[in-house]
Length: 100
Image (cartoon, rainbow, N blue to C red; front, side):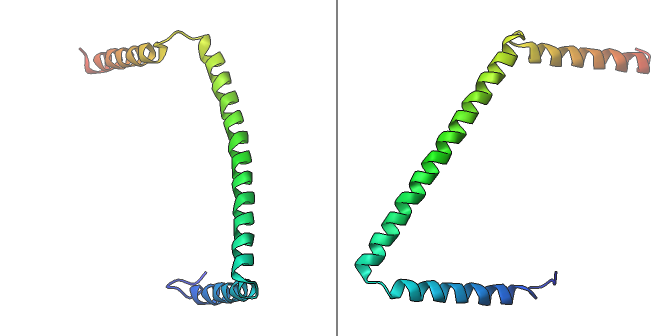
């Protein structure tokens, strides 16, 4: 890979060519046909995104349920208690090493 933009120009030219072709394709249609086509495509895209969001929501709900089941076996506040116990053990260990 070249540095300082050595490879950026070919990608830019390719993108310009693709954009020009897309512009010609849309220009061949009438304005109303183009608007109708874009509206249909956006509706399909929104439907797809809504389906994917629903799947993601379902999987997230499953993960939350599993997490609650896992955490249900532990006491509330156990993380705080564990952290305090670790701090106390650390302080006692330091006292032993420092001769305190």
